Length: 286
Image (tube, rainbow, N blue to C red; front, side):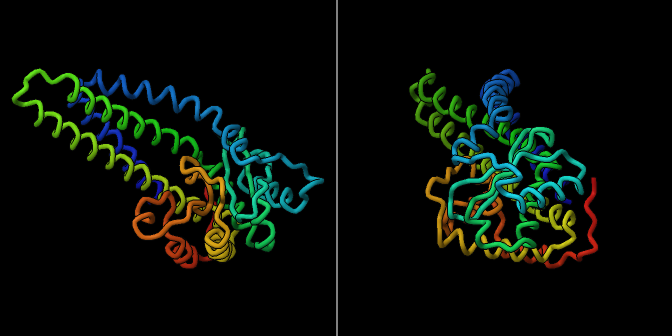
């Protein structure tokens, strides 16, 4: 079901791109924007792991430096049938974790110092199972594709808006054209953002389920999520960047009300509810 939702949302994003491209300059306009966005996201896809790890000051650790962490990751990677990811430590007391890398052969798992202080081994295994599920299912690739299409839509919207402002020839209709262009570009760009966020939330649900199946222990991840949510609100991540918020297991950006509507993560309560509805007999599927 999560795979179907992801595919449907990606198709919807593509449809928004084609529609806006047709309005601006036909298929050539859409293709041009897609190429521009694709180049930017190509760079992000190939080097995003190095960029985000450096952004958060993550340091690679050896088995001798973090034996428990290493043993958990190695065991889960073996269960999932993927190569051993590189393991990193982030110097932050905010408890959180993320996985990155363009494919399982170039993956890395990063955890904060804070997460090691508040989770027991069973809960930490649940969190790392979630992250390795992201790696196994190539969610970085899915996120890159979604970002490429959403970026192209945003770029087209900007072109459409400025084209109307600078290119209007008929003074009688200029005001109406500009207003129409603004409305169309804003609505379509907003819709693209909502769909992209929906894809991110869908992949989080899928990683929760995949991680629970990998560890055969949904309750461990449920317990960890509750602890992480409470602790991250009490100790916000000072250097959290909105562009990387979707990578973490819980949203590092603190906010309620309308902010929750635009969150990259589903509500923790819903994630916990779904996990607790799973049975320990669930099996990880390759």
